[in-house]
Length: 139
Image 1: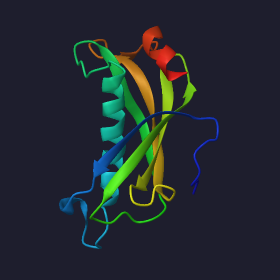
Image 2: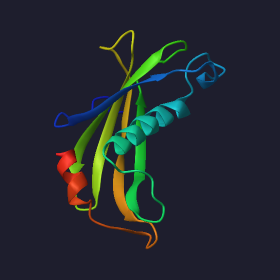
Image 3: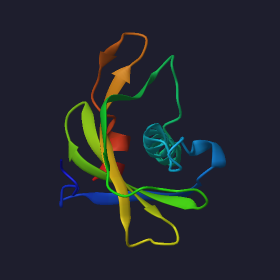
Image 4: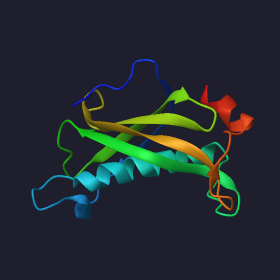
């Protein structure tokens, strides 16, 4: 299992997300599905800051794959800091990575993961090049 993110990444975003009581599972820690939700929340906020709102009638980002490495348990109560990074950038896609840490232990990575983002023309249902205006903000 790969626990470290690639070393040639650029941090592009960070945000704090409160863990909720209902995020816990029967084992008393944050359910594994919520790590994907935390990455999604951070990615969507970052896309919003890039000026890329969801637009099903136009073009925009779609997740082609996603992964997570669970390193240490997150437990309620507390906040999660999600750092977002950009990796390889292709013609119609780019890689994003995240690491998740407790806000009261910011040097301790509890989980990391990422997703490949593909730029899509939604009505045509096909990939298209990442717009230059977005690409410039990724590098």
